[in-house]
Length: 186
Ligand SMILES: NC(=O)c1ccc[n+]([C@@H]2O[C@H](COP(=O)([O-])OP(=O)(O)OC[C@H]3O[C@@H](n4cnc5c(N)ncnc54)[C@H](OP(=O)(O)O)[C@@H]3O)[C@@H](O)[C@H]2O)c1
Image 1 (tube, rainbow, N blue to C red):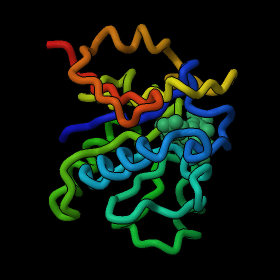
Image 2 (image 1 turned 180 degrees about the vertical axis):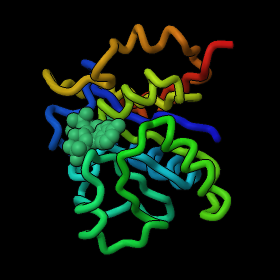
Image 3 (image 1 turned 135 degrees about the vertical axis):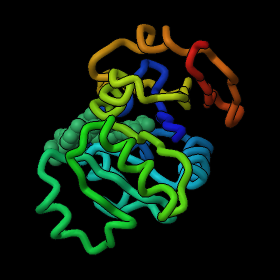
């Protein structure tokens, strides 16, 4: 299964100012549209519990996608959830186990790709486990956050990109939002 990272970073390289900072507050409308369209096409997403809690309507799954949420303590969250497992599943599987599990579910649930939607700790784990085939990185070149959470908790962006090559770069608007697609180096 194709597994990809999808993220937006500020001009100074941050995902958000802190773990509660909702990206919708500072990223462009065009990036939101891109995120929405590409993750819907994938059909399945995975994110950390803090990112799931920082979204516009906290703890609500994105529609038309299987939502996997990583947490060390899934049972109480699942018990409280009003959504079926086919839409929202809390899990403590490792990234590698989760990709295998998603692969098994993909036929029954009708999805073909897994979008890794952050935050920093989750991006890092999938990167370090070498599970990311593609990185879709939106750079909001007109936004500086000053301080905050880096894209990868464990490694610099420059170091992470050494394994990847730039496939394409697309301007999403005319005020500095650029989406880069990076693929694995052959
Ligand atoms: N700009 C963007 O594109 C973008 C995208 C995504 C997120 N963000 C931002 O990033 C920030 C959050 O990032 P973050 O790194 O602080 O948190 P995070 O990765 O969203 O969530 C971390 C939490 O996920 C759970 N978790 C992670 N890996 C796990 C594993 N292998 N097994 C079990 N549970 C696991 C743990 O939850 P428990 O504590 O429940 O155990 C952990 O505390 C927010 O500001 C968010 O808005 C930005």
